[in-house]
Amino acid sequence: MGTGGMAAQHARSFRRIPGVALVGGVDTDAGRRAAFAAHFALPRSFASVEEALDWGDFDAATNVTPDRAHYPTTLPLIAAGKHVLCEKPLATSEADAAEMAARARAADIVNGVNLTYRNGRALQHAARLIRAGAIGEVRHFEASYLQSWLTQPAWGDWRGADQWLWRLSTAHGSKGVLGDIGIHILDFVTFAAGLGVAEISCRLKTFPKAPGDRIGEYPLDANDSAVMHLALSNGAVGVVHATRFASGHLNDLRARIYGDRGGLEVALERGASRLWLSAGENLVAGRWQPVPSDPVPTVYRRFADAIRGGAPMEPDFARGAELQAALDRAEESAAAGGRSLAV
Image (cartoon, rainbow, N blue to C red; front, side, top):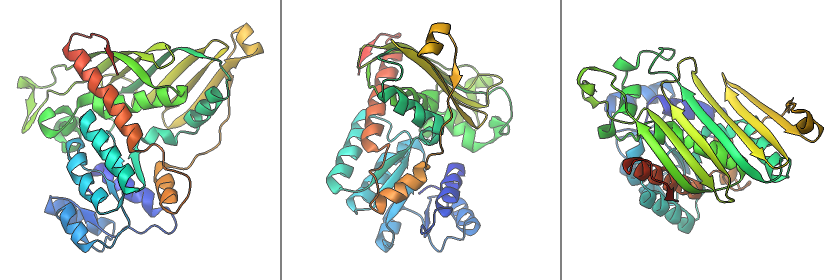
């Protein structure tokens, strides 16, 4: 559902999984829908989720619509008993995300959120190390998600591309950098730490980017940078930040997590997934040792496997709702001048 740029990534990923067939595409834009269906040789296409459900001969759907469309387009799928993989954020409010999670649970369908950086081998290994006690009790952390497409045209000039402009416009459903990539780095660091967010303080900033802060139909009013201070459920504290103005960083995630018996650093930078650990004798000497990690199945493969009766899907809608609660409190905190709020 949805046939834009990210939908192509979903389609390519699912086509690589043996036994998975792409049987249709849904989009309200007839031209985009037809081009997508032709490119991926889809046998059917539909103008709405209701049309697709009237046909109904499919097991699962992947929802790659804009953020604000996730809630109204996913609920009919759940009601019809279809398994759903939804792009992040799950919804644009805590209430909607919680309802989606509750309905999916009641319908007993496989449900997942496409937090793509869970596919990183280093992140998964870091999470296992922390859960095994490799660094002791988590005390402090810092994490960042850095992009630069507002300052360098590595992916094309954002000023003339709808796929970038909508991300800068609240009128087009964008929650800005907070909702677009802030959710990824929040998941990245809290999944690795194995801890939830208990308290959050946030500052959001929108910078001038065009005359009148508008390009065509797009008001450029969504936030460009987010800086958060977090307290986790065990009392650990740290900082998390995300921006599209990180010149020199195309798409880089990094987290440093420190415990009372060691520390680790996990990064996904320039497409490479890396992990370092300082513990034991290395901790005494202040040395950091690279740690090898094994490949992990993609979120697309995990979704297909869960439908076939494999391990439960992670991350699921419940995780998406948990993260949305943190995002809502972050927005509220920013509106209150950075006041710290319980999550």
